[in-house]
Amino acid sequence: MSDRIVIRQLDILQEADIEQLADVLVDCVDGGASVSFMQPLSHLKAASFWRGLAADISAGRRLLMIARDAQGAIVGTVQVILASSENQPHRADIAKMLVHRRARQHGIGAALMRAAETAARSVGRTLLVLDTATGSEAERLYAKLGWIRVGVVPDYALWPTRGFCGTTFYYRRLA
Image 1 (cartoon, rainbow, N blue to C red):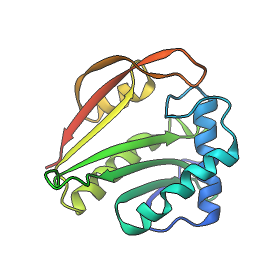
Image 2 (tube, one colour):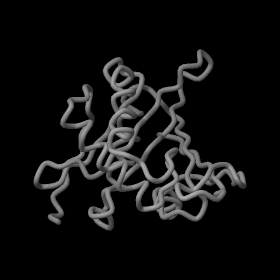
Image 3 (cartoon, helix red, strand yellow):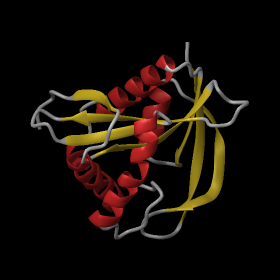
């Protein structure tokens, strides 16, 4: 895999993007990521998930960052979900930070997170929160990027192969 990765924000989901995002989601779930889906995750169900987000992305309620490799394939993604509560106009949630297994260890996750933070700042957000499976690779990434660990809720979710996993919550203030 080439190290040339391009990170950008998608404002509209095209069908080709949905298909590639579905590939990334299926790969991550197949690899054991606890990201709301159970194994086996069909490509059809994964594509349906992405199609269901299209309206929020187009309306700007959800910011979608993607990473493309040198061949133009989507190999990673992260979402910034803008808080809809009247008393939280400063906050956003980070969700579905996914990197295809073939593209890992190239700094893509860190680049996606930096892009998400920049995008959140650009729409006036000053506080970000996220959660991740306790003990996951993502925990090391978030700590390295300066996210503050709040704590762990045991048995919060299931691993995609069944069995409970804890969830660790983090926050980051944006300057």
